[in-house]
Length: 146
Ligand code: CA2
Image (cartoon, rainbow, N blue to C red; front, side):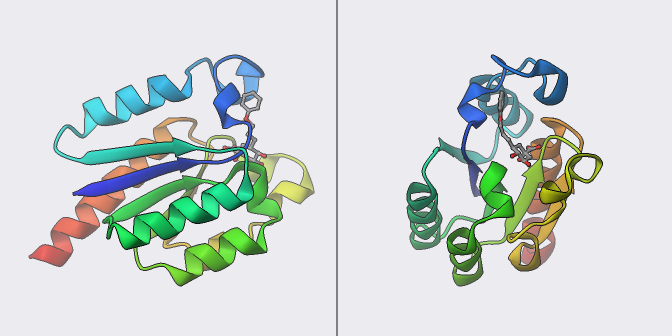
C-alpha cells in the first residue's frame, strides 16, 4: 500500500514556532512516527510552500496510482480553487487533515475549498489526525479488497 502525506505552506515551521497551537513535533518527527505506526505501508512525504508544486505533486500521486493521500493544505485550504480542482481531478482518495480545530479559530478558517471534494476531513487532533487519516485509508483499502 502506498500513501502520500502532503503538507502545505508554513508547515515546514512545525516544532519551531507557535507550539501552543501546533505542538512541538517537527515534520520529520511526523514522518518517523507515522512510518513507525504503519510499518507495512510505503509512504512518500512532501511539503511545499508553493501552490503549483502541491498541484504537481497531486498529479504525480495520481500517475503513480497511490492508494490514498493525507493532505494538510494549510492556508491554501481556505483560498485555493487550483488545489480543489486538482483533488477533484485525481482518483486516489484524499483525506483533509488540520492539526488545529479550525472551527474554534477565525471565521476565515471555517471555509474549506477542499472539503467538498475530499473523501473526508479530520480536524483538531494535532498530529494524531495524520495517523487517524492513514488508519482510515488502510482499513478502507482492506475492506475494498475483501
Ligand atoms: O491546523 C492546521 O493544520 C492548519 O492547516 C494550519 C495552517 C492554517 O492556515 C490552517 O488554517 C489550519 C497554518 C500552518 C502554519 O504552520 C505553522 C507551524 C508552525 C509555526 C507557524 C506556522
